[in-house]
Length: 465
Ligand code: FAD
Ligand code: FO1
Figure 1: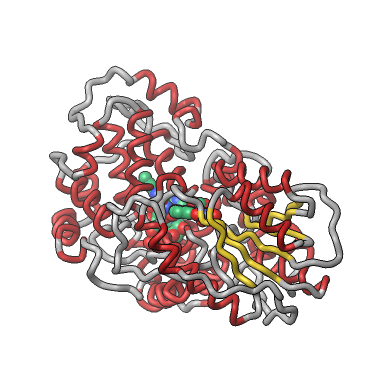
Figure 2: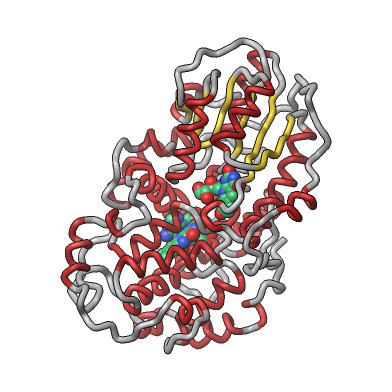
């Protein structure tokens, strides 16, 4: 692997103290970063395999009912994995799909493989940390974690929970020139794996899935790493220049739509950033986009890494918890239960349209996500109920749900995380408020409502791939 070795080492962390062995395949347990190219974890695993003149094998452990995911998200993920398997096989790297609990299945497979070393990718979610701890303890060989998701590795950029973008931004900026380095290509692997099996029968895997299929797949955004590259090219060519305005205007289709691909690791944020930097877009457009892709996204990982209560009201900052408690008994102007919200049956046409877009397309404009979540705070019985509802709807319907960005977006909207105190008002206390009239002053609300209700709100229109 090329690149600066000192920088490269900052992405890696040993998760156990097992002694290394000199022979035996190297195993990459892929989880968050489901791609071949631009994957620092896979590159690290290949380097270890080349040193040993050993085969390289990738394993993905398919877990039933991962945080309530539905067919929409499993379908997107499996299509991407099928493409990833093919790309690995072409490069002489083995691929195995395991079914079950990673804590048990990964060590069992590593032992059967007689793996000399295991590598996995970094993820700040609690469930993933628990998996890694269990696997690290059960293995008899070293387990390395590699941060292949963040440009500046989350554990390196800061050792603590940051207060907000204003405290993380300077830390990232100081390190970005070093870490935003070119990413080497994975080499065709010269040491074949003798245990290679037939390729995975993905149709059979889909048939065997026992997941909620009432939330169907969408067809407007094609899954997989190749589709991610096409969506990125489309963004660079046609949308990036106008991003600063489009990011505040849900009535135009001006966002990148990269979040589902980033969530499943079907594209690398570092690759996206390198392409944005190299593009001919105006500097203010580049910096507005990189603020979201790098600072905001990496701030979300920072919060989830250092605050295990990232999806609970107990994780809110003290000032926000206090002010929300002061207003707990305030009368709510409207009250809606989960079912009315889910069915987009409120008095607010903008909110209903946003909810319908989430349900129909699996994605909502970033600006509206804030309004949508804040109205749930306004219309439900307590901040705890609001937070739970926001996360439940976001994760059930969003293609990009179950992500640090989602938990932090919910906590920002409902609980002032990474925000500051604003003027006090009912229900919200000093937590920032957003209003329908404020939206009307910023963008074409009737235009958005009409568009979201139109044919493209369903799954079948405007395929991106
Ligand atoms: P673009 O504007 O094109 O942004 C490009 C990338 O930058 C995004 O893919 C994302 O990785 C990053 N980014 C943009 N805005 C933010 C942000 N506010 N915080 C962190 N990273 C950001 N994002 C998710 O990825 N998954 C979620 O489940 C999710 N849920 C959210 C829920 C709420 C209530 C809120 C307020 C925000 C949520 N976000 C979530 C953050 C943001 O709205 C989305 O990342 C963005 O809308 C995704 O669309 P895009 O890729 O087209 O965005
Ligand atoms: N990761 C896995 O390692 N195995 C899975 O079976 C799995 C399913 C899954 C379903 C929906 C979804 O949104 C994510 C899923 N992920 C799975 C995890 C994902 O790769 C992300 O790492 C985390 O959700 C966020 O960082």
